[in-house]
View 1 (spheres, rainbow, N blue to C red):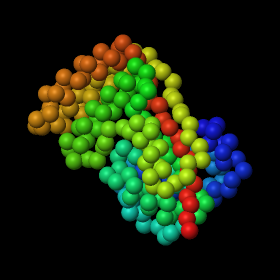
View 2: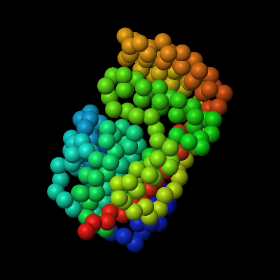
View 3: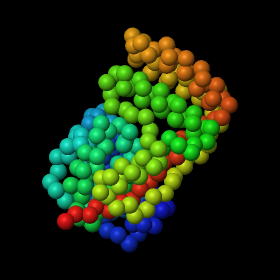
Length: 235
């Protein structure tokens, strides 16, 4: 991310906490900007953390929930959260904890996909994402539908963070071939199988051919993400 590199080119970030790190994919992105930074990633999912540790043997990973961080106050120079806001049961509590463990004057970086002003191919991605989030919720997993861009910014400001920069990031449009379409359909069908005993099963089942048709007609493109750089202001 060029904008991220430009913003931090004259700033020192020795330690960074990545909240909801998953398999560590955002740490890979952050390393392009923060060359000499010590990374720590936390996530409640152990299998994901094991993948992250293999990808980033130079980083530390801990099994932890973002709403209750087991770190002392003012531990890190910066913290990040990527593609995870919509997984949080309490967004404000997680931002509160992130601010607590970041040093005064430090930074919080948010990278989150949003649900409005999308093109037809991105709407396909959104429909697939919302299909999965519905299945997860029916199985008791916290997975909300995506926020609008304004809602994401409002959540950051509500947490008392000062937004320094906010910019959009887009992935390239794809024209999936028959094999990829069949693969994506199979994933949806597998997810559907997780809720076959639920009353919502038939309604979800009807969505699969609709998504398949849209995928053939419009292609696929990940929903646009907004990247926010905010500062932590403490007394």
